[in-house]
Image (cartoon, rainbow, N blue to C red; front, side, top):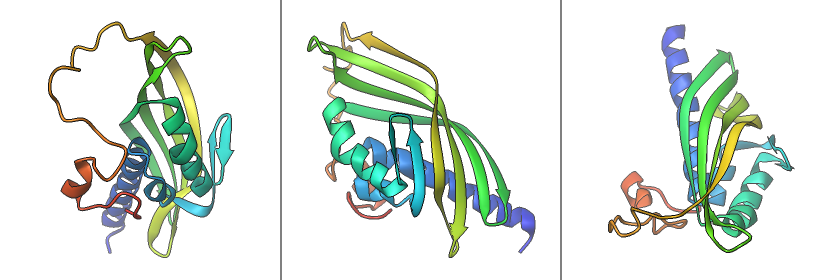
Length: 176
């Protein structure tokens, strides 16, 4: 195969893997999130560090449900450098959560940063081997008003009830 075509395919597979991570994290889908990591991988999210699969289970089983009502990732540009079966990637992200403050009032937490990943292809499949989550900025704002609360938009769900699963042909809790 033309090496340029292989590089395009590799980049597409890595970009899809990164998007699968964000989807699984936002939907609190631990199994799908764990599947983006190799079993012997490592995730460094500051205070929370563990093997990739353990980190996924910790986040989706305990941290996200306890700390926020909703979580949404928006991924920005990714710089991806491929060297055979290894790759490095820097991907910008914006993560936004809705949570309750200590005073019981709703808060909007925004975090902007970058995922710096080392990826590896094994058996023809790309997965994350090491991830470091970098914080470039963050802000927490009190929610004074929610203009869209009454807009009758369908709600997102952290379960198989989320409309994305049937549209994508996926099942919550299954490897994507």
